[in-house]
Length: 156
Image (cartoon, rainbow, N blue to C red; front, side):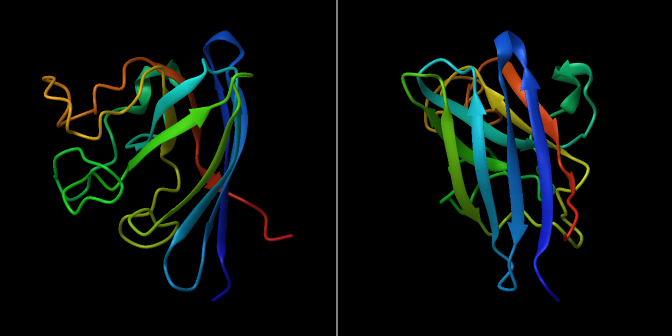
């Protein structure tokens, strides 16, 4: 089997936008690459959410994708949601260059992220370590400023 590819077009508040490509390689790792613009400089929580529903903007994408019912954590933690991808960093121009490789998000199989949403948040993800009441569920990453539904991409 060749690599499986998907794409998400990000849109949101205050001209937040961009596109991300997801490629799952033969080892099962998924690579996420792309750019998101219109962010405030600094760290922004970055997650896969359970639902590919943007009828009410990014709020209708539901909670983090968490098929194994774990607590929120960092991408490197054993105890984490499948959709916990940590933070992206926006430069002084508000552009985040995304380049992530993760083994917990898949583009095929039982825990596929196809049809779900990728969400960028207003604030940094504390990776479950912040001591806030939301740390173990959302990383206390704040409002959802941009999102996009993850869909299959043409192999051409």
